[in-house]
Image 1 (cartoon, helix red, strand yellow):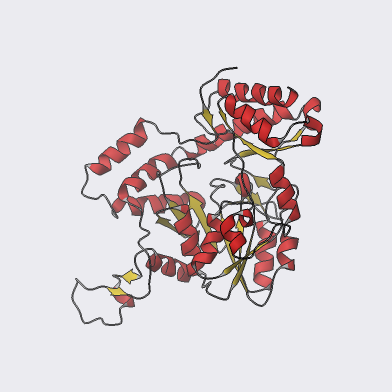
Image 2 (cartoon, one colour):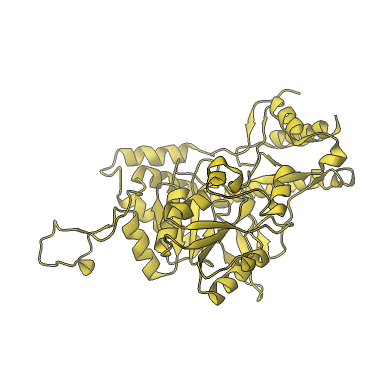
Length: 391
């Protein structure tokens, strides 16, 4: 079988996106200007939150969220090992200690019961990850956070446009439930600004801290000045912040992309539905497991992960992976448990602390899913996976 290479994720850029960036290049602002304000407002309107603050990356958004939460040296933050390293790295950036809790065996998200087991007097926050786009058990985690006076941070890099239903059967958009919710606009995500991120919150105090943190800790607002006798040139640095400011060029692209987000999500659902239909047939059920979807959630399907029954297939995951790559299918594995990495091993973390997550990692492969894929691409992937499993 031969086919063009199909990456697991890819940006979808059209002429409108290109023109939006060109128009900004021809404007008076390239760095922080009116497009930033417009993008942040439109993003907040889409989410339904009070504040949306743009940053240079999803990682910067997580770092800012940890800072704004008051997490510092000596604190512990509970999170999942099934995530990209940036989630727990952001805890280390502020001098705190990541504490890994095991995942739910169905959703593969952070298990609230495991979170409760790991709460100590040093615990400051919980960072949940909406793995693959399926919302974590946010209402349960929020309840735990409130009971123990913890901050709930949500890494929603996978879940822009996802929704979750509460016990009163009301739908809530991701970005409106946690104290702080972070998003990523990397090219493989739902929308892209090349690199970029966003933090959403409804809390005035948290927003003020985020705003200072991303601009060197500097304010130009006279209301916050310690010395108010100076002229209009005056500004003050109130804390040691970072230059995490997104550019107007990126924001212009983000505005254009945001207008197409619902279309992008719809296409992701179409591809996921086709995969589900193909791999849930009886002859495949014993060989692989399609992604479980909780009834109270609606995933935006950042990635599509299948779990392999390798003993039934009779081949190793590496063998299947290599075969599919030879077929020009950009399969991947999301994720290596964070504490497996040599850096975390040097910090004293050891294998065995989250057995469900570790077993899960050994059995998964990520299939391509992104709006740029054609129906022909989807059918080619399905046929290739079936061929690889059976031969």
